[in-house]
Image (cartoon, rainbow, N blue to C red):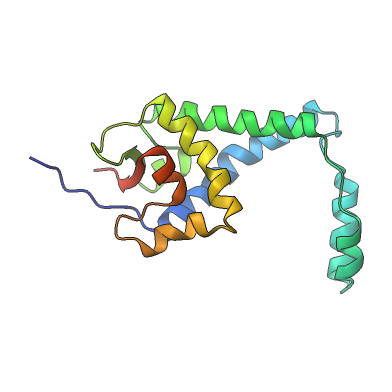
Amino acid sequence: MKKSVVYAGFWVRFLASFLDTLFLALPVGIVIYFLSDGNWFDFSQYQQNMAYAMSGNAQKALANQPQTSLKWELLFEVSVLLVTVLFWKRWRGATPGKKFLHVKIVDAKTYEDIDNKQAIIRSLGYIASTLTFLAGFFMAAFREDKRALHDFIAGTAVIYDS
């Protein structure tokens, strides 16, 4: 007997992603920033650009973009990927944001837990969803199965955890 599946919609997924940014990416970013001794990116340049933007001088704010260290950026990206995959494995397809909202990532055909390969492919699939001017993410808003581009790439779906 096939269990009843309720797909998580765009806004629930968006909120889960926002919560994950707060609870996963931000703490990892803070650790990486301090490990880099402030060399990951030029925070003072960000502050100066914000001051230009707030004073109505957007052109000047956009003219001088802060430099980032590729080494530290890659460490951040890989760290977030690893932490995310660890949560997916530990919490059966959920990160803190998804867990809080009672949704999880599953195999799109079997609705069973995703495997490591799917977890990694899905994470890398975010690149494709982003490079399509975010259309890959917005697909979830218009599809009956609420799957985004990275879900198709990895063969996953996001459903409510029953």
